[in-house]
Image 1 (cartoon, rainbow, N blue to C red):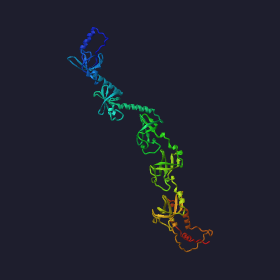
Image 2 (cartoon, one colour):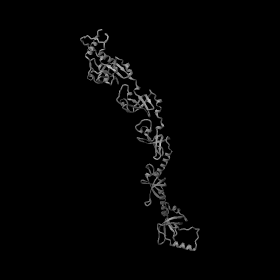
Image 3 (cartoon, rainbow, N blue to C red):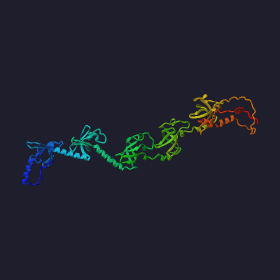
Image 4 (cartoon, helix red, strand yellow):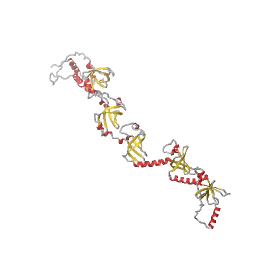
Length: 530
């Protein structure tokens, strides 16, 4: 309860009213804790005398004028005679009737009321940091000591809190407890709110297709985060470059400045999708002009598959070197036998299809074709020495040059029939052979061993008259089986398929008795009578 103790000077009193007021003043009683409004009468050595409507003026000691730690000279100057002041009764002396008042108590109550109103409204307050304490700093808010935890001073952790001492900052009351006299402030809450407003304004200003520049804030497996100021945008790994990479760190670094293109914006979720490669021309649009068929280019082997090697000619432009285009002489089972991932190689453009984004390359085309030179180097009849590289039922493979093999068919191993080549020859043996034929197109070489062996001695056989064939003119004879076979050997041996035994006549073919005699006669040079 609050009582008005002073009257305006302009008001005039009648004698009756003056007597009534004097009686009221004599009968007026005050109690501790009561809030009164009075008028400063004078400032003395013990305090400030205040007329509160009782028969004796109340006294405000200097230490009860304000909660601020001020020297006595300044305290004496805070109140002047005639000032209206709100005070709280601290105690009343029953013998002398002296009343001790406190302006500090009322001031504190007013401050707490004000702080509570700010807390309920959620409005930020301006405070001054007074000192650093354990776990944070202490700030003054309307004469009340408020605590700001270190985690609430900034958006990031601050290792040194001394720099905040003496600063005036804007903070928000996040905890208020009047009875315990506790006030907790947060500067971080204010910064986050300001940041959120800035983000929303920035997101609303972004449009798809717009070009923005930022700093790479983080590099992850799935993409790159680029700081644009108020927000971070994501460049998905598929939008970093046209080229191939295993991890984004291979092509971009944290802290790097990059220019990007906005793909999409979601203000509600605060998401921005960006692209770096959208600002780089697609290399497939100019591949025909830059790399026509026959062009030699250098590239890097980026991956190997069972069917070939992929070579990156430039970022985003890869071509396939098929396993058949790796070497003229080798027939690798896997490309890793010829090239390794990461190798720098020179290749030739064989075919290209920009529409299908396909580029066919050749590695062996960068070297001379040894098969074309082989015909001139080894004409039919040339004797060569080579190493046996394989033995099969249909013949023996002999390497005449590194990577180039020829077939000695089972019929060309010896004058005698060879039933089991593996019993006479083994891998690694050195063999002298003669070149029968070379087919550079099919990459086949036909060889013979028996042509270098002495002919077998003729065997005497009993001469038998041969009956003329019916329906045929005399003087013309049917070629013997031996002749047919020889014609086959000389004319068709070059067509043997090195990897197809079914294309070669087998040694188990049956021979008729009459054909055997015919062969013997032919070997002796005997002819039918005319």
